[in-house]
Length: 161
Image 1 (cartoon, helix red, strand yellow):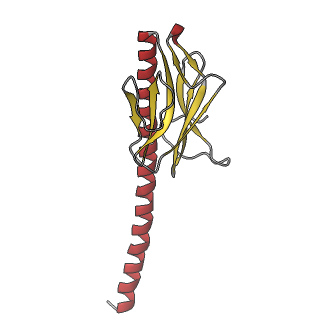
Image 2 (cartoon, helix red, strand yellow; image 1 turned 60 degrees about the horizontal axis):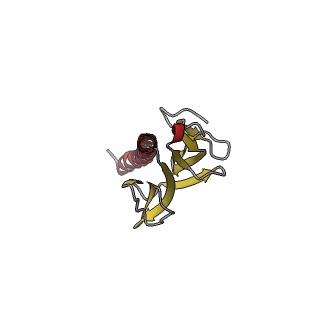
Image 3 (cartoon, rainbow, N blue to C red; image 1 turned 120 degrees about the horizontal axis):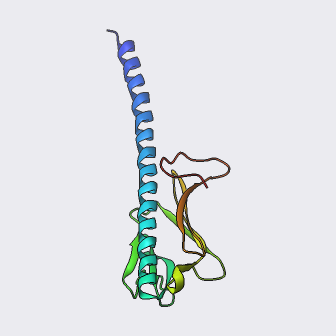
């Protein structure tokens, strides 16, 4: 074996290792986004059930707790410190996840009367893509993968918007 052959083998191994690491990091980002959006959907279902059960209005607010983002459900006015008067809050597991809330004229939240809601959506995003959690006025919750600049990211298990 010559020195040239050994250097060639090392260069090929370095290229394959780099592509493998990039693929693994992309996979981890997709899994984190999918799991976070599923956990947030479960949290919203719990808030909806509690609002219906207690016949109360629970509004959703986004805020920060330290350096982590969170969403709280409460009957009180917005509090950016992620405190909830009913004890319901969702803290995002990673600081790389961004959150956007958009709503209709009514505040985004659940109203106990006949299981209705303030329509809107929550967009959860990171380097792997964007997932939109949609809340309809009739209280229906669903999750879909949103496109970014016309490009549809690969997020298995999540339907496209």
